[in-house]
Length: 176
Image (cartoon, rainbow, N blue to C red; front, side, top):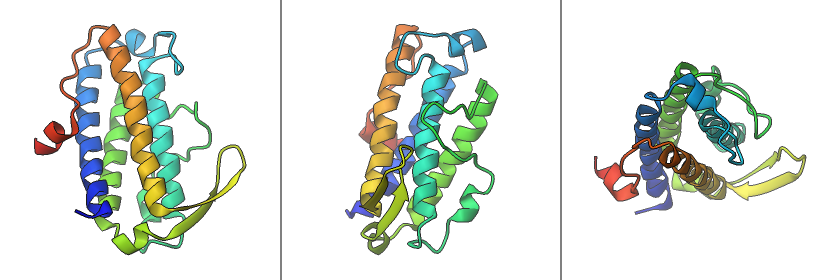
């Protein structure tokens, strides 16, 4: 299995797990969804917004490079991410719509990514203003690691709230 095949599997895992977690969150009242729980990102909705931030900014960095024949049209209707605490969704309906759309865009992007493209280098400016050059593969790896890290925080909050969200194991989710 190639690195790109792994990314394709991770994109599908991301999509399926996000849908599973959205299903768990739809049972929450708006007050519970936005309640300050004392975490780094205070509420469940704040965690979701930060995961959206990471996906949006990294996907835009990838697609803005000269490495891809497809791309920028995927971003036409998506918000532009500029800072880590940015709010993209103010309620569950907005969150579900944007998360579902972005997950499909990520699956589409990774289905079209080639091994040659994954080895190319892109340059971008971080939110702190630092100029960075990295391989496409490393940026993709960061995208998935960022999601996993913050979904771990999100599932911790859901556990503390007594909300069942099911199995999060990659081999189980991919096999579904």
